[in-house]
Length: 450
Image (tube, rainbow, N blue to C red; front, top):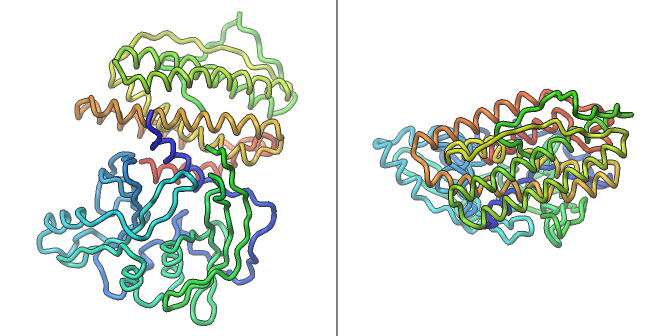
């Protein structure tokens, strides 16, 4: 299996997960305003360049990923040419005399740039640029010098944040993160992913002058990098049955035991799911790399079921096996639709949540267990996206629409499920996110993997 989907997910998870701090960090006294809007930093609606434009787009490009098509214009997402639209403002080619010609010229603008950032210790390069349309003219700033010329004087909080971002500093949302100082602005920023040797997460206090000079006033390491950093799907046709012959679950002494009992049952179900997937991939003559990855995932899920069952028993519960399923090999379109829902949506978000738990759980045994499970589940999610690419290339347009519809429906169902708030004891011991935190991570995942 190729690694680009795995690398993509690892870097994305590092960006979406909140940083676990030790209580240290840069001083906050200089920051009295917040510039984040719906988790989006420096929205381009607040940017006023030196010369007005009809449309402005901040984008990044990581060649070779291709997570799908979301359209063009002002849509935020990842489209067919692999550019990620981080933020956009206005309407593309709104004032052009020939809109189609203008749009064609816009999509021919270069994606690679000299504004490059590393990929969180995985040797991935992401290129940033600003692109715009102005009447019949289109253009892109692919160097920091060109970006500064386009912006002109840095005369707003949003422009200061955008300029800092183009220089490798990401504003920290969720708290006051900007203030004014003589001659410019001061921002609270973060760099690094914590994923990969030496790529520590650092907080910075950064000064941006109105002329575009950037100076780091203070820098503090708040999370050491993990050199080894790298919840599951249900089988088709699965149903939970209340079987009188099945052993009753032991009444847990606390909600944590009940939580891990439920997780263990889902992990056991995932064993069947990957057994089925392996057989269906063989039936449809999928590449050997996909079949081997699915077979390995089955082994992983069996281990996860054992580990989480032990955690359930540690907290006074005993999982039961009440899942029954019957299946025969399905058509490729049906396999792909199920993979889109269970793998590209549910399992991908499950991997992100497991990564969160591995950082936040107060029980060290839970943290150790979830760290391994998170690595495995992220690899399983990458397999789902790899399978998606292979299957879509072999299906008709109507079948591809069916797969897209299955993914949309799964997103809607999962979003509805996030109304549930886990008990505080589960949040503390098992590290489960709060409702608000889960929604924030889910929205971030949607934006990047649509």
